[in-house]
Length: 192
Length: 192
DNA sequence: TTCGCAATAGTCGATTTCGACTGATAGTTT
DNA sequence: AAACTATCAGTCGAAATCGACTATTGCGAA
Image (tube, rainbow over all chains, first blue to last red; front, top):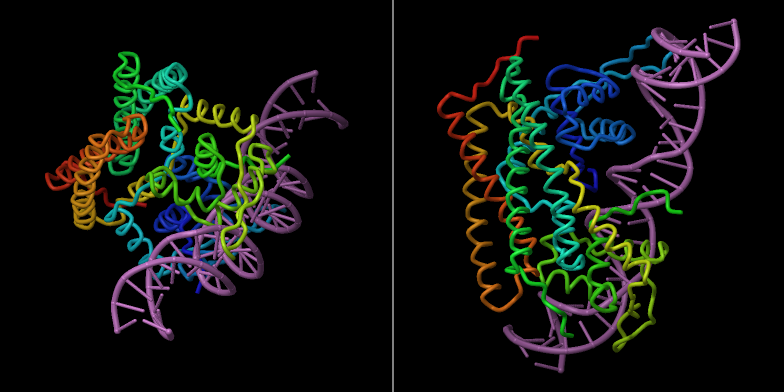
């Protein structure tokens, strides 16, 4: 029994890919990148191999055999086991069903906004707002193009969600900047 | 020069606390928990000690001396260095200024929503919606109480942000559930 | 008063993750 | 044709993280 929970985000990504068809890790990498799967998880190659191995010991994935092209390193092809399929569904279900508090870098930074002072805060937030709205515009366009190209909406549903989050963040940033400028969000001076 | 970037979320939390006054790690822990600093970062005690040590080698924090109460283990008190103060501001500024794509568990799960099938997806999303709205209500109440109690808004600004994100998530969940029920979000059958 | 439990404070081994490195093939400049 | 560069594919040691473990004090209940 593994001591730790094996909760690297790549776990879902790998199980999800193998649900479609068996492949070797390098192929997973390119597939994930191609279809913007790197929009749902940070992908490090070394980690990917580690995760796949961990999945094998967990019994959720099994080596299917090896291939070789030319004199390149041998590639091991992995396939999803039945247990792996169950695990994928179980994880998906639980991760969707129960909201856990998630900690983003930005949230952590916002918690110490005070240390930037009102001027610094306005400046930094304003710039973020600009960059963020540029990104939103780009993502919206891209999403529309992909959908127009016939890709089913379900396959880009996470992009839609991310867009919603980004829009809400932008709205919040705007109100905070306004409030600081208007003096309604005040900077308490420390009394120790 | 450390090989890695030292980007554990606790870094900001620790630097932020030491900005106020020197303390020992255990005190940081209780302080962080008390003021809901655990709303901005996951806190593991072992990791906290590791991070503090890393901050020392980075020169951002320095041991100030040791205390001892009774026969308890000795406590080392740390203080922020000037370099540490600079680093705090630099990190804060850059983490706020430039939006990076952040990967939450939920986002990762949503990317594979298809694997649950329409029924399973509706079920899981509906439950999340219920739990989430309960949480939102609780957080709203708590936030209002704290503010009414005289805590400056700036000190709970991250709770406000988190609330905004949660509300947007809830709204998105509701539309997706409706769309699945209405049949406007269709489940493509795989043709390989 | 003695038992048990919570809070205090930190250590340490095992696991997980990272990212630099290797080394082949194929295409493209100069 | 030599010299670059990009892509392919994976390995491995070092660094980061976790969480189980230790050990003391103080308090309320039995």
